[in-house]
Amino acid sequence: MALSLAIIIIFGLIGDWLFKKIRLPGLVGMLLVGIIVGPYALGWLSKDIINISADLRMIALIIILLRAGFEMSRETLNKVGKTAIRLSFIPATLEAAAITFLGPYFLGLSYMESAILGFILAAVSPAVIVQLMMRFIEEEKGIEKGIPTLVLAGACMDDVYNITIYTIIIGVYTGYKINIAWSLAAIPVSICLSIGIGILVGYLLYCLFKRFSPRATKQALTVLGVSILLSQLEHWIPIVSLLAAISIGFIILELDEAMAHKISAKLGKIWVFAEIILFVLVGAQVNISVPLRAGLAGVLLIIIGLVSRSIGTYLCVMGSNLNFKERMFVVISYIPKATVQAAIGAAPLAAMNLAGMNTDAGELILAMAVLSILLTAPLGASAISIAGERFLEKGSPTASHRDLEAFIDSGGETA
Image 1: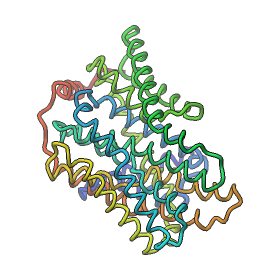
Image 2 (image 1 turned 90 degrees about the horizontal axis):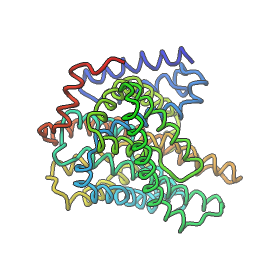
Image 3 (image 1 turned 30 degrees about the vertical axis):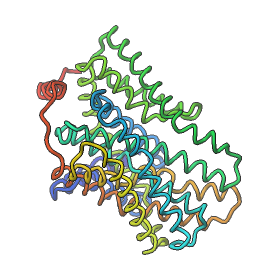
Image 4 (image 1 turned 135 degrees about the vertical axis):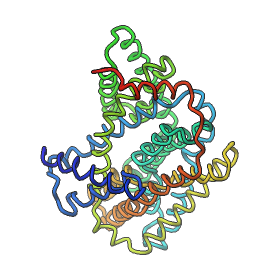
């Protein structure tokens, strides 16, 4: 496994550097490195690291979402709250609906199978989106109107919505007894419970740090460790660990900006390593031979779904104070697929197999999930990066951002 880690780090850094040299997001290079060195191509990564890939990717996601929380002020959230809520379900619903109704004609699936596919494909990628939005926050692009925060908040709730609806449909399809009304009601309950637990944990950590005054590095590691523990609670109570992680950072920022910025700076240093692990291992999940089964009809269906999503996204931001270019930036930001599709793309196939059903539909759904990653992750990340540079205005630094910049410039505290 040590050799696999070395391969991930060295080649991930090379991929990151090469793509930045041609003015494309480094994460695209890391995704492609993962595809190449992964088990479905060169096979350079050991089975041990593939087996723990999901846990490593979750830890990396928690790190970047913690950083997002430490930059997400209450004032900014108040600006974008209603629009973020609309973005959490309207674009996904339109995309999933388009795929549900057209799936039988393009792919020969039933309407139920098409709905399963629709809600898998409708989930945006937190791995891609959060990383790029954090970059724009650090560069102070679009921060005066809270645009990166708007996209962050909407995208995180979008995943909760899609995964919940997918779980309901696959349960009904495979014959499991599911209370649909309760499952739908669980969406807002899960979101509120996750935020509430995150705020409570964040407050307790703040009190602990104030009482014992550990160094910023130890504070960052404590926050990370507790957030990882919260991710394990998902097996027992209906919380979303990613939303809880954001809430931890948010409440500490509200209580003590200086403490929050120091912890964020330390997490930023950890992210240098975690970023490589996340995107290379996401790429390693992609079996490039699988999408061939979907063919051109699959490509066209994905494009139609994205067009439907884009219409929904634009409708969500029409009532906001964003200008046309900024609205188009939000539309483009909702394109990439990767994390959720890599995580649950094969789940319908496994569920159908377990239920003793014909697995042809499951294999096709998996093929479409992989195809959506290949089509949208590199192109979407590149489009977001270009649109951000051209469409977002650089805001004047807030006092909190000036404090963070001064802290980073000074090298932080030794730890």
